[in-house]
Length: 112
Image (tube, rainbow, N blue to C red; front, side, top):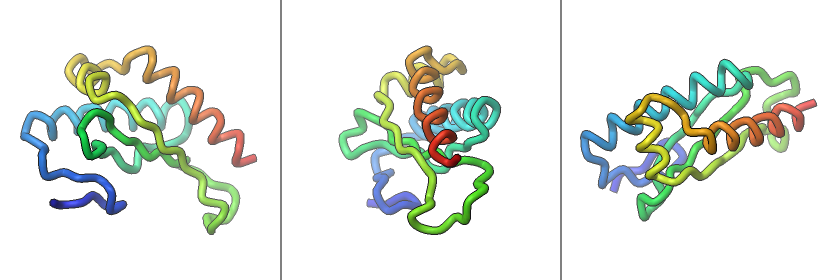
């Protein structure tokens, strides 16, 4: 079983279709996060059951030194069906947008 950059994402079950959908979803979230919240999507991987995708988001700019414990990031879990729907339609769902807005606003506020 291959693992992602963080060592926790299992990719052994990915089909070509899943990879394409994951790439499309990655681009949607990354663009939205950069445009609206000055953050970016660093990682996207499925959980072991492939029922959810885990997203790791970080700010594009950090004023404080980037040393522990000043590491600013957010992990979110999004239902796999919702990820696939957004990737297929090319549009983030309202619930994904709400989650991103809430979490990334809190992330940016915690940096001040």
